[in-house]
Image (cartoon, rainbow, N blue to C red; front, side):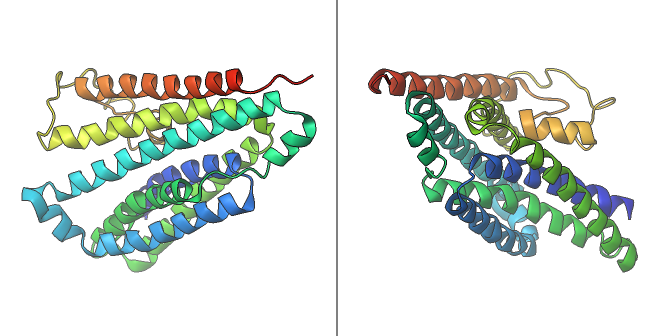
Length: 273
């Protein structure tokens, strides 16, 4: 039961935190419908991937799963940068328009496809791993204990994700745009760093430094704190030099892009009297 609880809680917590942050920013029902559609497709895709996980692991000389995860993580990091650029544009417009126009911006929508892709990627990777790990425990535990542990893990992750969401929606949307731009920059950089982790495992990239540090003895990735840090910053208990280099370069690029969007919009927009 404890193994099932920890597996489901850890994997679902990552899903709920990412989806909660997206739903807090995108308050228009159409935006949220796109996110929900992507999450639903990701849920269905997770079961399909889990059913063929053994074949996927054996593909490309055993590197199929690593390449699959790296591709999803890179896709998610790019989509998050697009979300940040959209928030930067909305935030600038909010500051520069009148109150009436600002109210209209509350229903301003982001293009649906990036939102759907974010919902899809947030669910499919963690969902597939959850289903696969639960299958692996199938013969090692009694079914009642397995399902009970998984159910409690899912409920705990959903409650924690809902608590984070409820706090985020209390923040003024203009402030939330600015806050989430910074937060999503770290999340996107962390996802890119995790993608590089798999590429280093496949020997497609050099590690540069084998382990910059090793915190596995006191802050493992599987712990609650480690999971939260992994979601927010792409935490790795023993990262390679290539992972750290990717993280900081991607973070700098994301912040520069958002800053240029904000300044460009500020210079182009007419001043309000």
